[in-house]
Every structure is written in C-alpha cells, then in structure tokens.
Length: 148
Image 1: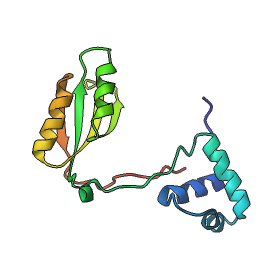
Image 2 (image 1 turned 180 degrees about the vertical axis):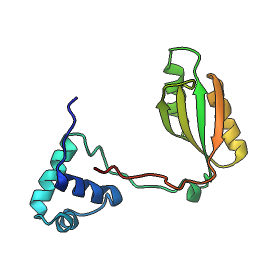
Image 3 (image 1 turned 30 degrees about the vertical axis):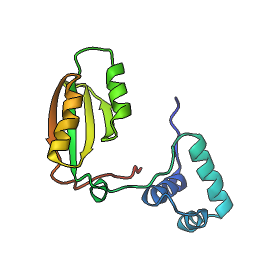
Image 4 (image 1 turned 135 degrees about the vertical axis):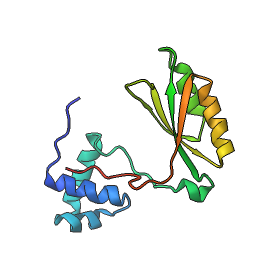
C-alpha cells in the first residue's frame, strides 16, 4: 500500500475535521481559504485514498455509566486467535484491542461500570491466558489529532 502524501492544505483540512468532524464544507473552505467546491473535492480524495476512514461522535463513557477505564494486557498461550476475536466481538466493554510485541500479546482497553464489573470482564479475558490489569487514574491526553 502506497502512503498518501497530503500537502499543506490537506493537512489544514484534516486538522479541522479531526477537531470537528461535523464542520461543513463552507467552514472548511473558510479555514483553508478555498472555494467550497475545491474543498469538497479534496475531502473526497482524502476519503477515497482511505486517509479519512469515517466520521464519528466522541462519547464520554463516564457520562454513560462506565466510569472505570482500564488497560488489560493478555499473554495469549498459542497462535490460534479465533477465541480472542470471538470474545472481542461479543464483549461491548472492550473498546480497543491491539496485537503488540513483547511479553504480552494483546493490550485491551476496557470500560466498566464498577470495579466488580471490571473484574468480571478481566475474568472473561483471563480465561484465554494470563492477564495484567491497569486501572486509569486520569487521561492527560485522551486523544491527539494526527498532524504533520
């Protein structure tokens, strides 16, 4: 796969859209000093190139009754990952799962209602291998927009 090489205008468009995915083409056009039709074409190209993969709302899990955030590291005992993928598919508390290098095979981001709930979710994951759980105290940088 060839990497897309955005120019400075593309980066400005991406910056605005990463901060506000609901920005209108008119808003984008003003931000980059271009016509709405030119900006629309650039956004279409970024989408077709797979640089922009979609648009989504950023949701606060705590406001939805999931105040506990944790990272669960899983040491998976074998190379058959199907049971892991099956568990991820049916466990809504799992927000992210990353296959990583090192002693642990997976790093999994989990949201839970309570410590007891986190223990239940960690137990399900632990049925697949050894787990280590780290509870998040705070997130000084919960997400960062990609930039140049």
